[in-house]
Length: 580
Image (tube, rainbow, N blue to C red; front, side):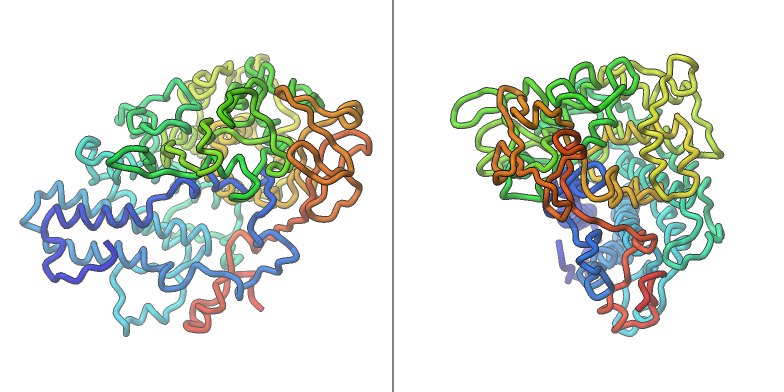
């Protein structure tokens, strides 16, 4: 519902349901929001990504959006409900009233979390503005105050939203609010731990309201409540979480966007098409760095990544071959089922994603995917708990905590669970240590093995679920988006001299690397390191590199306040580093 005109609206529970369904319809993340959200990170290569990181794009306040009337309408809609729902007092029970107040405050927190991630300091608006309201011309509030209010809203939602998932199935309920709170508080707690200053002002945190540890403890509390009270459990089939329509029947899933081929809900997504065609989406590819994040099934890191692509999946964490196209993977095309090929016009690293792909033929031409998409799931909650405890007070994660979180996820996947602080059984991963040592965040060179392994698990469990960029930003590691592990491009498959000369065999097909034009099974390899070219790191062999020059500067942890907004209200002020 976009407009409320009746003075008597919000008088009944039916009115609440109608309005809240409108919020869901407008603001619930869709398939592309979730599955394509990691399309431009340090671990995923793309042919067509955001200009924000491109030096040639010269991003500035003139180009920045997300501050117009439509961008703030979401906050207004939550405040309208909070203002007008008092009409229902006496018409509904206190429990119903408080539940829907919790829903409205959940959405206000949801909207403000996005605003803070984007801009840092923003105006806190907790009522419906009139045309002459002084707040329209006020300055921005400090991020610490805004996040204090976000936490207040989330605490109310977590205390008052219903636990009745039959009446309130796949809408905002207590478990959705708690899952979101665990995500938000982990983000803000680690953000303040790894950023010495508020990036909007370049001034140290005042800690006037909550400290970094306060937020981390709130994340632990929220996750622990779900773990001990919600009755959720990990689903035994990881890949089914991303290829199944009826994920509402899977106990791991807390909130999801439903897609289904039926008379009642004939709604589809285009995820399979997006990940398998050169004519749609961002043409996103896995990188060598992503491949290296996956352990071997025995719980130890790989010894070398200089192996043939056909051998790279053997003996590895099974989630690797459930995320990236691997030997033995089949599809149906042209009415024939057989080994699925790579498509070099779509991928740029020779690796190809398969996490969200439903392998039936119409998906590759018309995009009729009916796989529903998890928004919050128990697997993330376990990782939020583990990381918050590991980061809290310099580490309070016990082996028992590890076993019921990261360890449980690895055991579900088919990977041996080895506690990082457990002695000789654990093998430290120098590649992983060196990878994060390239980041510019505070203390990133002194990360414990436990923190490193949790960060690894967030990749192997959650990649392509729209969390990687947020993770890099909160860890003060966003420079890795530009630096990656080659600085001037994304590193892909390793090719021997023989494979370069005679072709690479993979899943029943042969792929070549000549100076001829790029097509479905050939990359045009040359020596130019300018954008959109491929080279090999060692001349006639080595890692395939797809070149695109990117940049990241400290000021980019927040976006500039748009020029259009400043022209209407100069009191907003500009974020640090973006001043003209």
